[in-house]
Amino acid sequence: DSELVPRGKGEKEPLEGSEIDHETVN
Image 1 (tube, rainbow, N blue to C red):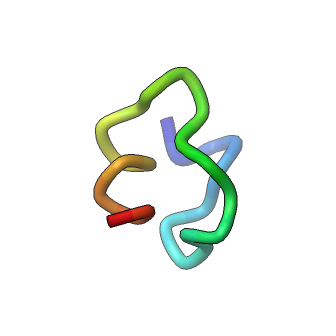
Image 2: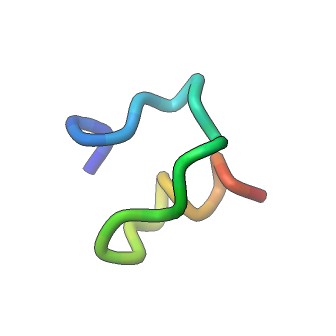
């Protein structure tokens, strides 16, 4: 989940629509 996109970075779009990525983007 957070392997591809670190929790600190919200600039990149959510990969595979991961829940963690979504929260980071929001």
